[in-house]
Amino acid sequence: MSLPQARPLRSAATGALSGTLRVPGDKSISHRSLMFGAVAVGETVIHGLLEGEDVLNTAAAMRALGAQAERGADGVWRVRGAGLGGLAEPAGVLDMGNSGTAARLLIGLVASHPITTFFTGDASLVKRPMMRVITPLERMGASFVSRAGGRLPLAVVGTDQTVPFTYRLPVASAQVKSAVLLCGLNTAGVTTVIESEPTRDHTELMLRHFGATVTTERLEDGALAVSVTGQPELTGREIFVPADPSSAAFPLVAALLRPGSEVLLRDVGMNPRRTGLYDTLLEMGADIGFENRRNLAGEPVADLRVRGGELKGVVVPPDRAPSMIDEYPILAVAASFAQGTTVMLGLKELRVKESDRLAMVAEGLTRCGVRVEVGADDSLTVYGTGRPPQGGATVATAMDHRIAMSFLVMGMGTAEPVQVDDGAFIDTSFPGFTTVMNGLGARIGAA
Ligand SMILES: O=C(O)C1=C[C@@H](OP(=O)(O)O)[C@@H](O)[C@H](O)C1
Ligand SMILES: C=C(OP(=O)(O)O)C(=O)O
Image (cartoon, rainbow, N blue to C red):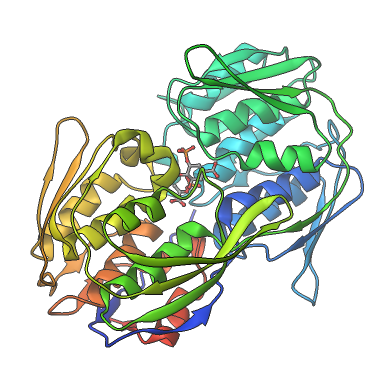
């Protein structure tokens, strides 16, 4: 396991931003399109796949499991599936790099195949909790050997004799929900996941698109029961991947922070389980127009027109966390430019992402001269003064792409430039970030 060379970057204040762009494809949808294509019969054609490192690791893993997954000269990806139940035992260890989504979803998928699969990841991923998927998958019949506490590297001893299961999620996580549903896919009978807080539903939407029966039912206590009927005939499909709303968040907040800016972001995914950041920014007074709303192969999209302007502090309720889970670092940056205090509640899950995002955001903002508080209840309070923060610091990123991008956006408006110690991990989710941002008017370069 070798670490890429650290790539320190520096971002300096800009004038008004302008331009039109389409950020790269949605990461969640890209992973799933490769995985589901690999267990379908026939060819899956994917337009606009995110070619970030996380997704390229998934493509390599699907090839190691016996599917074909290749990029054509036209930029379109084609997957020829092995069929459900047809995944082959990989000869080597699957290295999922930096990606929790790839690791957890694939662990679920192989658990109901009669093969043994070894997984590992980079120095960030091997620290992240896997018991959350091991526990339900063991109940369904798979066996595991893992490091203490359920960390990678681990081996999944799968079986084609898994039993269906009803599982109530102990934590709001689309990755855990998906791991159980994907194990249920090759399990005879109906597997159900109950979630008290709705998390992103790309697995459910896309499994239906491939021909599976996936139903949802509202329970008496308000929770949602999601069920998949096992062993369907999955057929290869055509998929159009929307632009990733989690990536669009960076140019969007940058434009909001620079007075006089006007930026148009095309084809941005508007799945309601992903749009918490946009709701929050609108409450803060942001000028965001949603134009040309339409459907792209089962997922809603829109073009977002963003204009720079003043923001005010707000309280972000805990039940909004699942729909904006990856956007708190960039929201905290926006809050540091706002007039007034922003309180973000219910951020416990941020502690188990690529880094402890709650700690890293608080530390970085403090270094840049912003007053913040982390509550014992895993809340984050950012005291905005309505004036640009000082900046002038180097921020630690701890192998976390979203921390790196958030603080580079911050440097676009601070009094002094902001440096990040390593921008290399940006390639996991947003290849071309620096070029795209500089095309709008940013001044991001090697430190
Ligand atoms: O299912 C997915 O594609 C994802 C789910 C979320 O993770 P959790 O399920 O751990 O909350 C999110 O943070 C991650 O970036 C992508
Ligand atoms: C949390 C993230 O991804 P993952 O869990 O797939 O590593 C993210 O992209 O912000």
